[in-house]
Amino acid sequence: MPFKARFWMLLALCVSGLSPASARDPLGVFGKWGAFRDTNPRRCFAIAEPDPERTKGDWRPFISVANWPAQRVRSQLHVRLRKNRKSDTLVTLWIGPRKFDLVAGTADAWAPDPRADAAIVRAMRSGEWLIVNAKAAKGGSFTDSYPLRGAATAIDAATVACARR
Image (cartoon, rainbow, N blue to C red; front, side, top):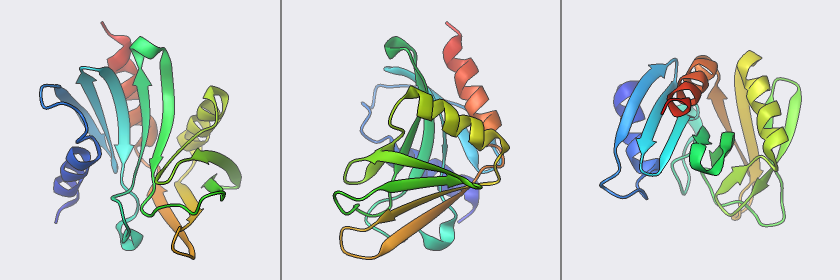
């Protein structure tokens, strides 16, 4: 299946919890990243799938950077893991030599605070790949790799779209 078709399917799956009445505006596809704006609730986000070679798991993984203007949240990282994570283990994000420890639930992970979000987004702007590593609940570890080409432009498109009234 072509990338763009898979991308639009991914988007539908990863945000399926929204009400059918919410409107989604595509802002563009940049490299392997897409940018979108929702009207209700108002949010704008950049999103990508990992390298497709190793995505077998319990979930369809993705990474996003979102803005929630009503909550005054800007550039918040969210990682959907492809497998349930072993409790009491770290989820680690790598961009080049930079390592970030994430706060994680069973299948999702976030930066621990806005300062870490900002540091991760800064690193994403100059990095080539983002790697997420975790230990699976059923044993073993898993790694998802995200290309960063286009990430900065998608993040900027989402930021600008939510800055407008």
